[in-house]
Image 1 (tube, helix red, strand yellow):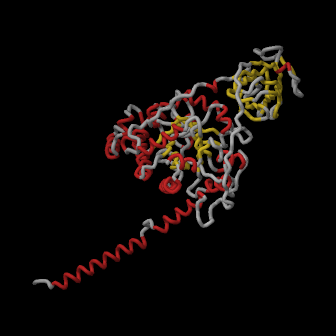
Image 2 (cartoon, one colour):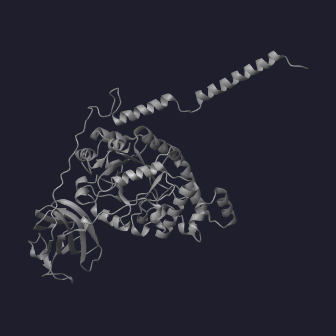
Image 3 (tube, helix red, strand yellow):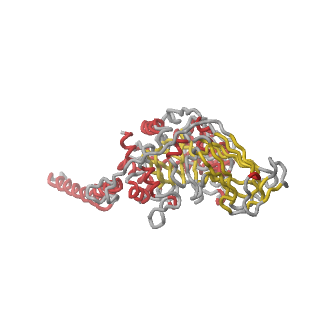
Length: 541
């Protein structure tokens, strides 16, 4: 029977109505992004940057910061060396000149300096020139313990004496002292102390010739934007320091507080993967780049496979077993199907397959950043030399293989080429191949009363470890590095990242002045030698 034409028309009309209804329901109930959400997010970042037009910017007084000028004294390098015997000084109360220990110099040593005493012994002298010095302390202790060195009332650093039988020499390098009267004091902390002498001499190590770092990223297939950001860092190397800040979550409350106090924002927003919702962390990182045009920094708190902890004491994962008799590059290039088949057949250990699965999940999390060509300062497998994280607890050889597996799997298998690789092994023994990292960094946490300074000793040590061919950075810190001392000590770190929590703010969100003052924060963010978000935006265009 032949169909009537008008029925075909009705059928087509009904089908069209059904399609329109289905699409409408999808828009109503599915979580598609919409213009209102985008506008709200954009308005939030306008507010954060102080550019909102409705008067709701975080800096209510429309702060217009004045640039802070560093005060750099003139350095006059000259040879100087002086040894001061402790027994030649006026003895502190309840101490005595002793000769019981072997190996002392002069006529004896000062013994029984009481524990827990600030300035337990003071050496006074006059230095002839404004320059850098090294100070050597010759001391002994009746039991293992820690003491500290002060110069002109400022804490230089702590030292530990473990040998209870003999005198030990402890040397601090790169101490900047201005010409004139100087007081060198020794604090005892948790042990009594015997002091033989101190020696002070000029230290020319800070004036060594500048090094030349690699101009290109280690990954030959690095994305153009990653190379561009790296070139920016290289171009400002040893002259300016880029400011970074870790955030505790996606609320960015640390950024809000910093803007309220300084009128500025850091150029780098550091955050973590592995501690919560990776997608939310990645989305927040993308927002920082898209709306604020800032630099994205990421670290990875990698829980040991099939566990919920990063700490070696809580897990029982054997890296050496995972890598035994394996070619790391071939392992890194296995497809998931081939890896599962090899594990089922017994030619691949379960530990190795679990590592690959974790890295594959990480690559999936990083994929949006790659697809949007957003460069990332990427710091995985951090602080391995300490041994407290599982990725460093099995020794440097196993750690090196894990780094290679991660590098090859991300760059060659998944082609995540927007990463700038930061090695943060904290030990020369854990150094990875030069062709597999771009920046060397160190985490430096100090006691609240200590002057942070430039951390010259760590700078010089890291420079020697890397052969002067890599950018150097402070990847985590407890206080603000001193820009003046960086310039004076010729130790200008490429960037630093201030940790969150008590190192910036109290639980109620107010500023915590335990480690530095709000004035210190303001001055750093408004110094010419520091690169804030505003500076980066203007220079990176």
